[in-house]
Image (cartoon, rainbow, N blue to C red; front, side, top):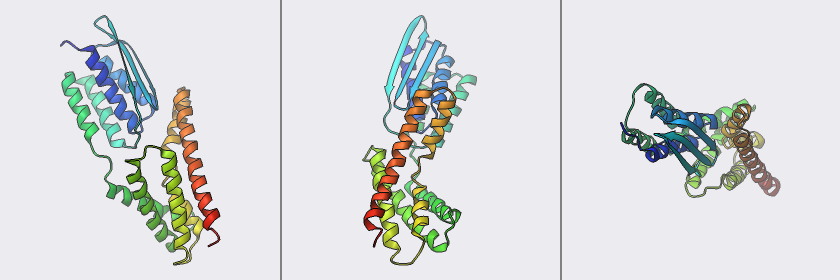
Length: 251
């Protein structure tokens, strides 16, 4: 079976792009790209990934081929990551032509992210549990759920049109803090517990975890990049919440 080197390079970077956009670790992205290229007979394969860039280089039929892909959008979708991993494992046992591979990749890429309703329900469960975890009672849990679902809806809708995670988290933390202060005038509760419980939805846990894992494995550039992203988001949460508490805390 004759393999088109350029087509293979584009297919490999497509798989890497899907993984990177869905929140996969850098080492997983590089390893998957390399495995797919090797499955189709490529030699001297080098794959390189950063949080915003993919590069693949390999030799096939005596010709050196490269491909570079810029990646911008980011989300979290562990289901797509699992399906790409399963596809790469399947390739090591059963060869498929590149058209079939691309059909599978396109099918995975077209899958919808988590439905907004499921996302909101997940936010409600998390904030309800966090309220008790931080020492709150039923009043804190109820209002944490209300605020958490509002903020989660706000973040999910805004992220479709506004690419900057810093400003999204800044606005979201300001909104949830303002709501916590306003709702306190309806039924008395511990304002701090409600704010902290709602803020936990916005904490960049995946970025922090991946930054540590990438740094430990020696991918210092991607580790530093993700750590910086997590720090900026944490600053946005602190600034947004702090400003509103300063302005409305007296009311």
